[in-house]
Image 1 (cartoon, rainbow over the protein chains, first blue to last red):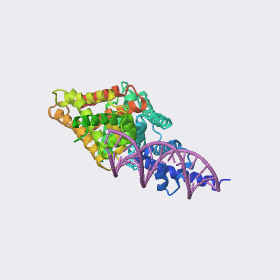
Image 2 (tube, helix red, strand yellow):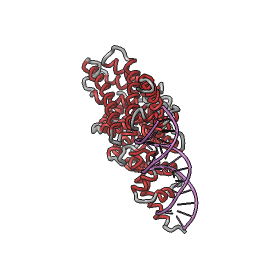
Image 3 (cartoon, rainbow over the protein chains, first blue to last red):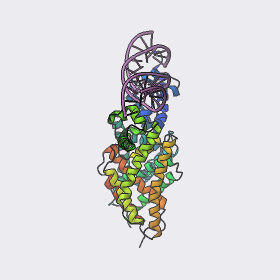
Image 4 (cartoon, chains in turn blue, brown, red, purple):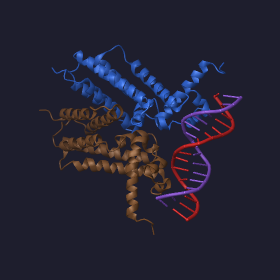
Amino acid sequence: MPRRSKEAALATREQILRRAADVASVEGLDGLTLGRLSGAISMSKSGVFGHFGSKEELQLAVIDCAAAGFEAHVFGQSGETTGLARLVEIAAAWIGYLERAPFRGGCFFAAAAAEFDDRPGRVRDRIIELTRSWLRVLEHEAETARADGELDEAVDPAQLAFEIHAFVQEANWAFQLHGDGEAFRRAHRAIRRTLGVAAPRG
Amino acid sequence: MPRRSKEAALATREQILRRAADVASVEGLDGLTLGRLSGAISMSKSGVFGHFGSKEELQLAVIDCAAAGFEAHVFGQSGETTGLARLVEIAAAWIGYLERAPFRGGCFFAAAAAEFDDRPGRVRDRIIELTRSWLRVLEHEAETARADGELDEAVDPAQLAFEIHAFVQEANWAFQLHGDGEAFRRAHRAIRRTLGVAAPRG
DNA sequence: CCTACCGATCGGTAGG
DNA sequence: CCTACCGATCGGTAGG
């Protein structure tokens, strides 16, 4: 018999993960140490450790926690639209999510990707999987928009996804590093211009 | 009297820094530890330490070393051109530098910026200074191109610099994280399209 | 979920 | 530029 109920243990786990994601966005997923994290939530190190079994499992759980928050915001905001309207909507929701600054360190995945892009392992694999799938969402909507005649037939959906993704990541970079208050507006403007140019001619 | 000549000491210092920049591009500027670095070049920890006096001074020296390599490549390649031709040239030289992969971990400054964008201190200040100045170079050439009538008068040079910078950073990101072999070609294509669109109408 | 540990490694120092 | 060391902290374990 566990001394505390499963519900209480799960609630503790969620509380740990929320704080961990915040710490990791600043210190990095590797700089997230069991000692500092447990101190920040007034638990013992091994009390935190017991919920995950290894640091790698903690890192993976933090990534999934951040992904769930991101998806809830971005997909929760978009309505029943498809194609170009949906592409515009989810890009705007993405920018809005970053503007609301869910973590102190800015975009969790931008930080995690830069940190782990050259460290093979399960953490890197999970980050690759999630970022690839997000790029595919953008690409898929661009494809639908082209098929529906909302974009010029010459448009390459993967190229369009690359450019939109670039603008939003650049805005996060410029805001976090330079404190550039124009950054998110620039991303909006760049996306609008790019989609305008990609519109069918006539 | 020093036991070894100043020249020899400086050569050792340069050797340390080259290796340190490579390690830091993978492990991060914080993950760059005196112990691992000294092991990698078969020196004692305190032998390396003595050249810098603190870990922060080592980090700053590594940043300046990476900046010198970047500038030598990018500005060394560009000729006597100005304005639009120069903007195209330095953007291409930048992409070429990243394609040649000077460090195992990809763009040194992209990694360093993501790591230190939320850690106040001299390291962050130096990264901000160098990245700001590079953005200003792009912006300045865009201004010149507009003044010379090579770009439409409605073009905002800062916005153009933002977009070009975004494409190259995105290419580095996609290549490092996803191993995307198309990434640098996509950046070239995006820049060409953006500058083509920004060219004067008529 | 806690206390009390483990070996390894960290940045940095003393002294030569 | 080296050996030998310092206190602090790391991820992880034993036992309750």
